[in-house]
Image (cartoon, rainbow, N blue to C red; front, side, top):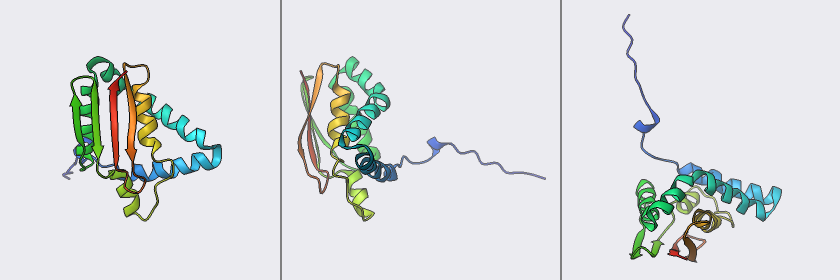
Length: 154
């Protein structure tokens, strides 16, 4: 008897993790309710140090170009837009008109956690720690996730 086998790998599928944003949103609220607001920041700092360790190494090696390429790639995968400008190698400004995560959370009839801002502020600030660069969240709209971010040489 002949058997047809299909081989599939995760890499065969389109990148999609929108429900991760929903789970993270719920997790932030859970952490605050159970352990207090400091736990939210502590969790996100640990996450950034672990998950983004390669990005941090790249930032140390190549400077802000590493951040630029990361942001372009992630927003392309999310099928969303980001406007990035660089001032030489010393400053990068990124403007997000609407956050794809916040948009997905709202489309599913949920409200973003009051701590969702920390997924931007704390994560990028932590990535920049112990590097020649710093991060500033210049603007953030809680309704849409619209933001203006600045990475700069210390």
